[in-house]
Length: 380
Image 1 (cartoon, rainbow, N blue to C red):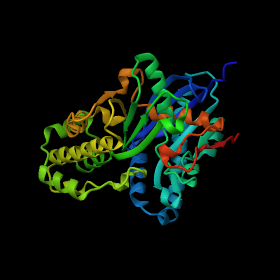
Image 2: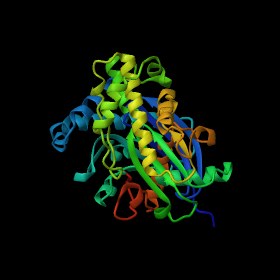
Image 3: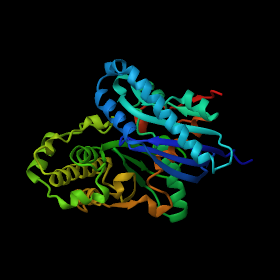
Image 4: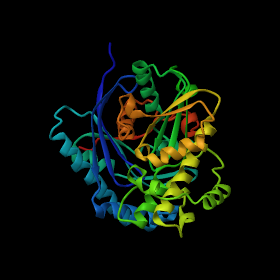
């Protein structure tokens, strides 16, 4: 008897806070996967500005209480925005939706204190859409001694099997997502023993420092294709100083954009600052890749907005300097749209949560044991 296929909507709004990725997928929560639809909806200017403002205000645990009223109002706005965009999609997609995986917008993440806050009211979304919703994906992991991130590795494992079957990529294989933060998953073999075959880490900044510089110094939101950086000149003296003084002391903790700062570029021209920040980001990503291991030939499939930044990708490759048997390739070349890996993943994680299957593991988040994440709600 074939396992049941569930149709799930996955929602992801990342640290760039620019909008929402929405995917409709079908899966059994294990080995079968079909991507049906992907769509991006940009936040309006006012909503994005409010998100960024509050993110910059909520710096310590007490700020969650200090700004609780504003956060509550913003959470409602974000939830309604998600509901409206899903309804737009469902006007055309008429098939039954079994559930929704609602990541929400991360506003604060401090796993050492067992606190993670994603703005997004799962109960309200369920009421508005009359669908089952899985949300608050990270809390159970950090309560189980985990870092709450990254959560996509089990989905990367699924992709690795699909890609290997179609393109004979072989193992080991890696996945690097360059979003606001960069995370890496390494899959050793096709074995179903997840715990021994998947390792994952946050390895450094992604687009966050570059995006922040561009927004503060221009009317643009990001460095499209790395064009701004390519017109600038890297300040090598500043780069050497910041590299010397900066240290990611461990790759066993999750990273947040608040762990990084681009103030070292103050005083540089807009273009030179962008080039220098991009080079620093590329250096940290390359060091993170090296840290995972240099002892085997491995192909890394790159997803996330950072893969489109040619200047950043060049910096990563230059810092790796062809010293290792690493191949960096765009995941789009293997039948997956690199813009929607995470929204697809949260649709998949929602199904696993519904089926009481773990979504995080000791070697992916540092949790004490495989952990079923996400809170299921039916509020209609």
